[in-house]
Length: 149
Image (cartoon, rainbow, N blue to C red; front, side, top):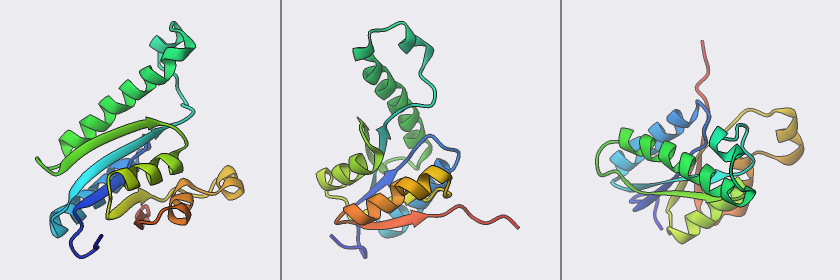
């Protein structure tokens, strides 16, 4: 594992508007350092259950959520320069655990993750980024939103 020549850069993406900033940072690093990207998304409690899931058995809901999120993540992968994204991974689970586990499974040299503002619940439970930093054995780049003038 080397940050001078990372082979694998894991980019953790959620469905927030800031995900494109995180992906852009991962793409920039991979291009400059010669690595490839693994895009990962964890599916937890969804803020919006797809309409099609409402008519299905509860056991099918995770499958539907995973399919929808995989399609969105694959679209983001297509927006990256050709050949840069080596893999797209989507798992149901707690975000920080999925990210840390996937980083180990993919032997990632670096994890790129977004930092999100501290809402009341974040102060109580801690952010996903903070938990990843505290629980992984990998180096982590936390991408912050650029300040507005």
